[in-house]
Image (tube, rainbow, N blue to C red; front, side):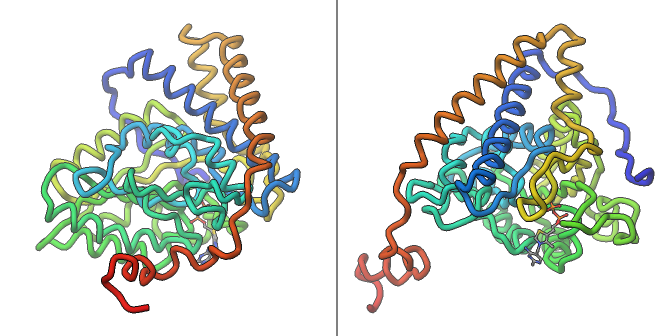
Amino acid sequence: MSSLRPVPTSPEAELSPELLVQLHELMVKARVLEERLIQMYKQGDGYFWIGGPGEEAFNVPLGLLIERGQGPQYDYCHFHYRNSGTLLAMGADPVDALRQMKNTATDPYSGGRNFVGHYSKREWNVVPVSSPIEVQYSMAPGTALAQKRAGGRGITIVTGGDAGTAEGDFATCMIWSSRPANPLPVLMIVTNNKWGISTSWAGQHGEKRIADRGKGFGIESKTIDGNDPEIAYREIKAAMEYVRTERKPFLLEALVSRLNGHSSASGANRATDEADCLQGFERRMEERGLLTRARMDELRAQYNTELQAAHRRIKDEPQPDPATITDHIFSEKDLVSEGRGDK
Ligand SMILES: Cc1ncc(C[n+]2csc(CCOP(=O)(O)OP(=O)(O)O)c2C)c(N)n1
C-alpha cells in the first residue's frame, strides 16, 4: 500500500557488531520457535496456533530494551499474542512456549489452560495476554499511573495490531495517558501488519497513519519500518527514553509483515507475498561480513535440533489435573488460607 510508507529515520550511530549478531541470533531463535509451534499444531500436538513470524525485527529489539523486573520500578508489559520474539529476547525459555502449545500442566504461563503465545510472568511484570483483543490498552494506564506515583524510570509498554485500534480501548488509552493534569508514562505500540484476520487495512482507516491519531491528543508519535531491526532498535530506544524521562505517552507504529497468516484457523501456511525481515537482515549481515551463510545455516539447524528434541520431551509431560480447574479463578482461596476471607 503506497500510503503506508514509514517515515525516514534520522542517521544515527551504528549499532555495534556484537549487538547486530545478538539481534540476529534471537530473530532466528524466534522464527524457529514459531515454525516448531506451527508444526506441533499440524501434528496434532496443540489445538490452535497464533504467533509472531514476520514481527521478529521489531519484537526482538523491544525485548532487549525492556527493563525487566517485578514492581513499578521496572517496565510493565501488556502484550498481545504475537510477542514471542519479545519474550525470548527478555530471556524466556522457548521450551515453555511448546508447553503452552501442548497445554501441559508444566506450562508456566497458564498451567496448560491458555492458547500458545498468551504469556504471563509476574516476576517480569508481564501481564496475562488476553484473547479478546485490545483490552490491554485500557489496562495499561493503570500500571502507568502506579509507576508515576511510585517515581522512578519504570514505564508501561502496550502492544497490539492495527485492526484492534478500532476498539474503544485504544482511545481509552490515549485519553487517560494524555490528560494534561496527569500524563502517564505509556509507550503505546501498534504493529501494523495491514490485516485484521481477513480484512485488509485498505478501506478501514480514514487517517493515513495510525500514528497520526496521537496528534489529536498531543501525543508524540512516529511510524517506522518494523521489518528493519536496526531502525527498530534505535527508534524503540528513543521512544522509551522519551517516555522514561518525560513521563508522558508516546505512540509508535511499526510496519511489519504477517508471514503465516492470522492463525491456524487460516492454515498457518507461509505467505509468499510478504517481505521477510529475517531474510533481509541476513543478506545485510553477509554483505557487511559480520556473518557467513554457513554460520547462519548452522545456527538455524542448531535451534531446530534443540526444539525438535524439546518437542519430543514435553509430549510426555502431564496435562492439568481436572481437580484444579477452578484454581486461579477466585481469589477467595488465597484469602481463606491466609485467614483473611470466608469460605
Ligand atoms: C474483542 C474482540 N473482538 C474480535 C476478536 C476476534 N479477533 C481476533 S484477532 C482479530 C484481528 C486483530 O487484528 P489486529 O489488531 O490487526 O492484530 P493482528 O492479529 O493482525 O496482529 C480479531 C478481530 C477478538 N479476539 N476480540
